[in-house]
Length: 314
Ligand code: DGY
Image (tube, rainbow, N blue to C red; front, side, top):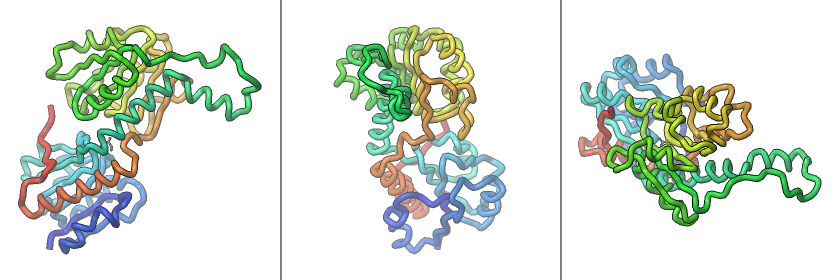
């Protein structure tokens, strides 16, 4: 019977892994409650597994795959799969899948809005002020923020998640402008018009540092930028510089260039919100991600088409 390795204990695993147990697969789950380091992963994969359930913290490249002689299927527990060298997997005949689904789309879209609204209304600063008992009575001048109603939202990457972020803007009577491979607008046009910009592109060689000194310079003065995509889509040092210069009024990031450590200066800035890659951390999304990863393993190991097979990106 096929052997599967799961690189970390996952939420709702008892529930979502049922098809693996019912199918009689031999399933080994890492006993470490942390990402496995490189050496541990290499050693484990030498155990001759047929299937691998990987996380976005597992870097799966040519060297690592050299330790996984029997591997046929990798189910990545994320929508993004920039942690996997899919091209090399293809050359080795290893199939790779991800976990796109409505649940993740909705929870990430909600989270992008959580960051945008919190920045516009200076929520972290105000909450800190109240928590520190600095509030002694209503004051007309404190924490004056910005409305989002009637403003323009720029979506960079109008795919499954970006389009849901856009949909939610209707409720605030916002104008939405979108930049994607197929949209009519250029990046420059979208950035120049937007009061708030939300990033939703996958990380590829084309999108790495898409947000840099040059593109930040195209943005409206005082705009808010939010990144729930992948950290390296934005050059954090250049974002920090734009914040310092007042070109941006706020930056919200759920993902960092070098996770888990954000660019140090961002940690000191009041108009920055940094969260630990939790945009999809809802019960519904996590259950769906586990269910989908398991389904892909089962289908792939049975030699059938994986429902969420992915191909190498640019
Ligand atoms: C994804 O799915 O790619 C998120 O970043 C983690 O859920």
